[in-house]
Image (cartoon, rainbow, N blue to C red; front, top):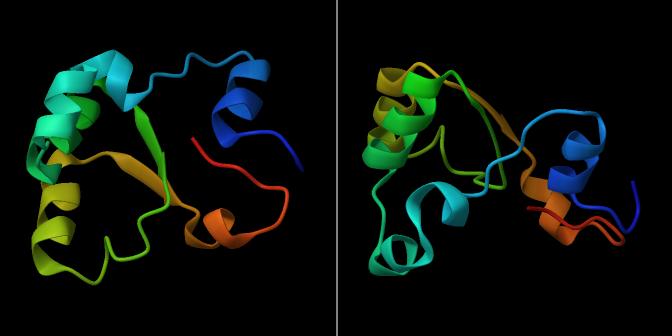
Length: 88
Protein backbone atom coordinates (compact mmCIF):
# COMPACT_ATOMS: atom_id res chain seq x y z
CA UNK A 1 0.00 0.00 0.00
CA UNK A 2 3.02 2.24 -0.45
CA UNK A 3 2.13 5.81 -1.29
CA UNK A 4 -1.57 5.34 -0.60
CA UNK A 5 -3.51 6.43 2.43
CA UNK A 6 -5.70 4.15 4.50
CA UNK A 7 -8.58 6.51 3.77
CA UNK A 8 -8.14 6.28 -0.01
CA UNK A 9 -7.59 2.51 0.11
CA UNK A 10 -10.89 1.97 1.96
CA UNK A 11 -12.74 4.40 -0.34
CA UNK A 12 -11.34 2.59 -3.38
CA UNK A 13 -12.90 -0.61 -2.02
CA UNK A 14 -16.26 1.13 -2.30
CA UNK A 15 -16.84 2.09 1.32
CA UNK A 16 -17.97 5.53 2.46
CA UNK A 17 -15.18 7.32 4.32
CA UNK A 18 -15.72 10.31 6.60
CA UNK A 19 -12.87 12.42 7.92
CA UNK A 20 -13.13 14.19 11.28
CA UNK A 21 -13.12 17.56 9.52
CA UNK A 22 -16.06 16.52 7.33
CA UNK A 23 -18.10 15.30 10.29
CA UNK A 24 -17.30 17.94 12.92
CA UNK A 25 -15.89 20.86 10.96
CA UNK A 26 -12.35 22.20 11.00
CA UNK A 27 -13.09 24.93 13.57
CA UNK A 28 -14.46 22.46 16.11
CA UNK A 29 -11.47 20.19 15.61
CA UNK A 30 -9.01 23.02 16.07
CA UNK A 31 -10.84 24.14 19.22
CA UNK A 32 -10.45 20.64 20.60
CA UNK A 33 -12.80 17.71 20.48
CA UNK A 34 -12.95 15.33 23.42
CA UNK A 35 -12.74 11.60 22.76
CA UNK A 36 -16.01 11.08 24.63
CA UNK A 37 -17.76 13.42 22.19
CA UNK A 38 -16.50 12.17 18.84
CA UNK A 39 -16.49 8.49 19.79
CA UNK A 40 -20.14 8.78 20.88
CA UNK A 41 -21.07 10.17 17.45
CA UNK A 42 -19.15 7.45 15.64
CA UNK A 43 -20.67 4.74 17.81
CA UNK A 44 -24.22 6.03 17.36
CA UNK A 45 -23.79 5.90 13.57
CA UNK A 46 -22.27 2.41 13.55
CA UNK A 47 -19.07 3.60 11.94
CA UNK A 48 -15.61 2.04 12.25
CA UNK A 49 -12.64 4.13 13.40
CA UNK A 50 -9.19 3.79 11.86
CA UNK A 51 -6.60 5.67 13.86
CA UNK A 52 -2.96 5.94 14.88
CA UNK A 53 -3.67 6.27 18.62
CA UNK A 54 -1.31 3.83 20.26
CA UNK A 55 -2.42 4.86 23.75
CA UNK A 56 -6.19 4.35 23.49
CA UNK A 57 -5.96 1.19 25.59
CA UNK A 58 -3.37 2.62 28.01
CA UNK A 59 -5.24 5.71 29.16
CA UNK A 60 -8.18 4.80 31.38
CA UNK A 61 -10.33 7.77 30.33
CA UNK A 62 -9.78 7.01 26.62
CA UNK A 63 -10.61 3.36 27.12
CA UNK A 64 -13.79 4.28 29.01
CA UNK A 65 -14.85 6.61 26.17
CA UNK A 66 -14.17 3.92 23.58
CA UNK A 67 -16.10 1.25 25.50
CA UNK A 68 -19.02 3.59 26.20
CA UNK A 69 -19.28 4.45 22.49
CA UNK A 70 -19.50 0.76 21.57
CA UNK A 71 -17.72 1.37 18.28
CA UNK A 72 -15.17 -0.66 16.39
CA UNK A 73 -11.68 0.82 16.31
CA UNK A 74 -8.64 -0.38 14.41
CA UNK A 75 -5.40 1.27 15.38
CA UNK A 76 -2.31 1.41 13.19
CA UNK A 77 0.23 3.09 15.51
CA UNK A 78 3.27 2.01 13.50
CA UNK A 79 1.78 3.30 10.25
CA UNK A 80 2.99 6.84 10.88
CA UNK A 81 6.57 5.56 11.12
CA UNK A 82 6.54 3.15 8.19
CA UNK A 83 8.23 4.33 5.01
CA UNK A 84 5.81 4.76 2.12
CA UNK A 85 2.71 4.39 4.30
CA UNK A 86 0.64 7.47 4.88
CA UNK A 87 -2.41 7.61 7.14
CA UNK A 88 -5.70 9.49 7.16
